[in-house]
Length: 293
Length: 323
Image (cartoon, rainbow over all chains, first blue to last red; front, side, top):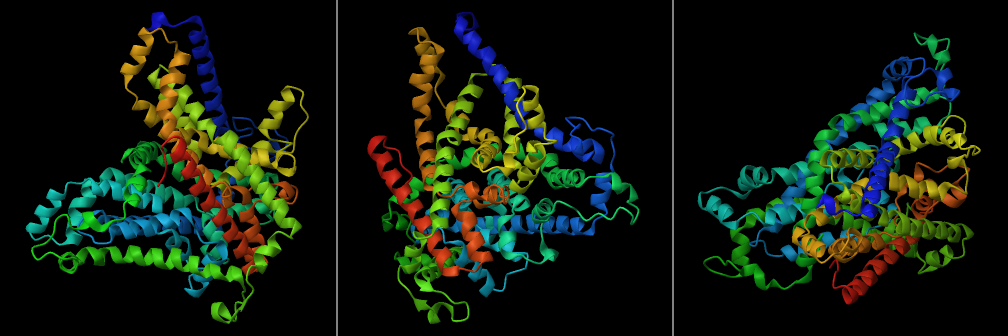
């Protein structure tokens, strides 16, 4: 086959490989630049001398960030929302998808239609806001968890997966005297590990990166997740550093930019560390949702 | 996605009683499997409370809603809020922004993953392909806040690496984030940077499903690689393209709140503001509840019309559709 390649196709291949390399660099180098800045001295950052390697390497930016109690608190809020939110997402999605996937369930088409409608027509912001207010969920972590408890898209993915589990297996479990809850927990969920893992990842990454709901419904710093804190840091140009004070007198030589970059790295670190694991599952999850018919 | 199609099309109850209980009848069947209904209850309640109550609450678009008088006590004003929209200079300017950004997104960001998937598909070295895929999927997992923060650093006119790079070619530094002339390109461009790689996954899955015999036969018939792409690969991708296109069309006015809000500042709001950020600013922050609900409802209705119309058109021409 390779012998049959024409000159023009060889030329195309060379350009294609070159293009892919450039594209890869365009995706990767910004990360490297941010990491390099976070480890560089203020003087190097503000004079624009940092490219892809730290200049006057220092960890002062990180030490400053880690000494800030509000960042630790925001980190804890984000972790809580991600863990609790994802658990609620998976339980809520599975407990609706399983019954509706069974033929014994009268009215399953109606439920599917009910979910589908929310996918193509959504309520405006203010009625949602008034609902949160009336439910007294404002300024609680639940305002960041409950509004998205079930994603319609993920519901359909899980539903189509449950649907092709053989009915005979479930029927025989029933004959053996298993209740529906037990069937769901000890048969359906273990049989659906790949789809559970993929959807869990979609939900978890969504929670970790979520910003909008927190902006809408949380105005007390106590419950700010990391993303909101990060945005606030970028809105204020000066981080009100008092160089004379505390153990950070060296901060006189630190720039707000370096500190911002260090916070970006910290906020992204969990995702980067888990990325190999994430990548394995999301490709599967995404294609599961689409290919099944 | 095709799941949705097959499930929602037939709404007849005929298949429901395929395996009837001993006594038959719906009530009997429901009683026999009552546990299923109990299990499904929280999910149903969730949709009713968090999705359908706000939909009902959208009636404040037809009221002069007062938070102390509530839904029942507020005065009805008919379509006055909608009429007000089109008299606002602000609204028309922001609608124009939303349409332009949506259009750029459709003609540039939508085809990008298709082209990238086709190019990835031509890579023969598996290891190289894997590495490139790993790298281009990654930006999708960053939050918009983080992406905006990185952009501030990278696009900075004084210290950013992009301007340093442009400087090598003798181009004067550009203040990308602080200029109305560039904000729309930044918004669409950041979306391409983040999602182009990730968007290839579905296309690559469709490409992997093409029967290799087709290419072999074409080879024997003397079709070169370009002709094979035109005659075999693209037609095989068409159903996927069509479905994703319809989903995209339905979200035409829904460019996204977060991805715009994080980039806006006093210097670029004029051209950068879209309907969603406008609704937040004048709805939540300035408390024009009824007026912005009308704006939101307008947006949702236009989205619905677009998706239904697009679906109809697509079914007529290609036989592919969402529902």
